[in-house]
Picture 1 (cartoon, rainbow, N blue to C red):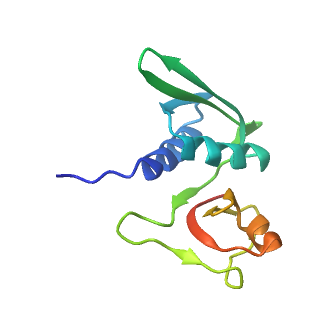
Picture 2: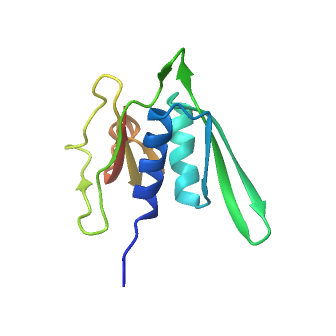
Length: 130
């Protein structure tokens, strides 16, 4: 039996598409992916996204963002994995480093680490994007 991590697959697909200069990608739908995409759109890493239902299957189309020939996403990595979850409290929350944001899953929803620090809550660090 194999264990898959759909969030890790999503992060890798996003990174690879931006490195190969693709205009858009299509991934399978999940509510968590939609929440992460909302954070990435708000922070300026993607242009837009939209979900589409085709029969019983739903997909998300993501339009990537570029500045000239430079991609807005230079790197992305899954931090918390299925085998090892990474939780941080409000006092040890990492802050923005240059263009890098930390995406955190909290009891109040998915948000950046800066928002967590402002609201005084901790959570699970899902990934970082820069």
